[in-house]
Amino acid sequence: MASLPTFRDFPPMPGSIVVDDERSWNEVPVPTARAPHPLLALSEGRAVFEFGAFFASRAYLSTLPKGDGHSVMTLPGFMATNNSTGPMRRLLKSLGYDAHGWDSGRNVRVNEELIQKLEDQLDRLFDESGRKVSLIGWSLGGVLARELAKLRPDKVRLVMSLGSPITDDRAHTNASRLFEFFNGNEPEEIRDGQFLGLDIAPPVPTTSILTKTDGVVHWRGSVQDPEKGSGAPTENIRVFASHLGLGVNPSVMIAMADRLAQAEGEWAPFEASPYQSWMFPKLTDGWV
Image 1 (cartoon, rainbow, N blue to C red):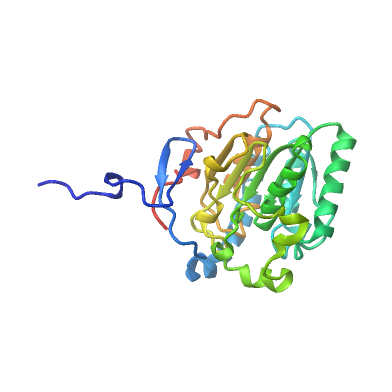
Image 2 (cartoon, one colour):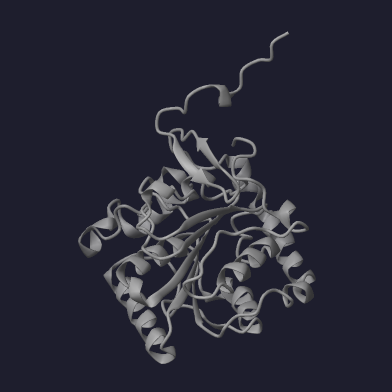
């Protein structure tokens, strides 16, 4: 008896994009943008367990690849402050990086004042060290990190975004109404349209870390399309995590340390070690 056809037996659906999942090239059909299922949003409390796992694995995390001392700037998510990235920065400092929070308080308003502060801080970190700065942004912070790298590509070493809605379509996140309450419907008008084309990667190596169980940003909204790059390499790394736990999830810390430890100018796609591979499932496993 012949087997039933699967989606792989048919041509890609209209609107499909090619995704590099670090293991193979696959056709991933992209449906109409939508926010995560409400049940995923309600389950974000599991981040408490990820926070506990971070401290339980702290001894192991201290054995991750050491850094070369270059500066790393972390940008918090929407409505969050530097407190949210504190554990991450303390780990990075212990690994030998010059880790910094941002100088902009709570991440609420995306306006000209914020962008100027980010540019000024990046310029200062670059001038003080004489070396390019790595940017790590969580959720909205990742969007800002990518746009900052577009403004100052000569001063940015790499960008990592954690569960970030890197798309112009805000329908991918269930925080869109709250964002628009503080920023209006068209905040992209600032900086002469600088914040249009969020899905276009900056001209520096860029990594998007995402989880299919994200309860705030639908995972499809965090996938980088390699066809929309700026000539620099891009990659997607999938982990098992919640949105609120991405900044402390041990698997995220492992991938982050691996990316940051690469010598400048010698970027290569992420490849988990055999005993860590279970933490990093293929992007195309399952459909949510």
